[in-house]
Length: 354
Picture 1 (cartoon, rainbow, N blue to C red):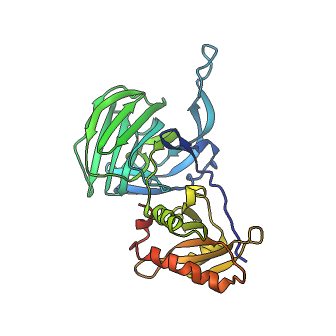
Picture 2 (cartoon, rainbow, N blue to C red):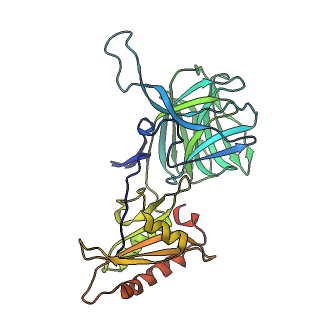
Picture 3 (tube, one colour):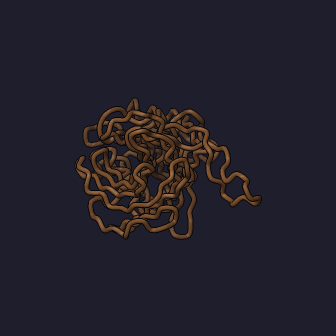
């Protein structure tokens, strides 16, 4: 019998808002002393990658103190980059692996804690790979905010302004992207006129530092218009064409752990949740599982989804309405054409989610 293992991730909380969706990165609820789940550590530049961990910190409180002189911060876990390697062209970066965004508003609190060569903190957005992305950062030693574009590993000229950026103090940094328009706010004020750039239409988001900067981040969230990835489009189209389908769920490997996670399903209700041993086995061993859910009578078939080289890169669980005399064998026969059609529409794993 096919078993289902769906565990809610603690990395993010996603909700639907009036003009799109909101994702909150709640570092306060993540395990202390470990990298945050759902992110991957990359280095742009040279030398060693950063040391990203969730650590105890003094985060700004949500409300103004009622009593003069009362603390304006509270003890909670925050995200930190802790490495002090002072190599100049070294840019430790932490990328969220959960989604790709085009139109969004990304806001986070940043704090420049320490650093002899540099004291910088910023965000990466529309990230493609370590050689192609945008970033905006604040410098406590330089007292400025700057935007940069990196294309094929070459960093463009800085765009920004001079202003005080005290170290050891929380500042709010906001990036707004709409089409090819990019807008920035620092502590709620415009610091760079709206920019127009066509280099990257979408990409991942993340956190950025430079050289030996020890920096912290908290209260991070993104409000965005959800993009329809190929994986989501394929699920939607199946439901438009087949009345015998109860559910289709696509699982892929999590780059940051041994887990597999839902990247697409009908209505997005399971997206981001972890799969179980069945889905892991389907991808790792290239096998098929089938069975009937005793509580609903629905037939469950979980099959590998292969790329153009024949490698299993995802698991697809197809839930089918049962009929009299239904067997595992004919349930697999019913599900197979759907999965084969999916395989004709992509070349490699990233095509499904980017």
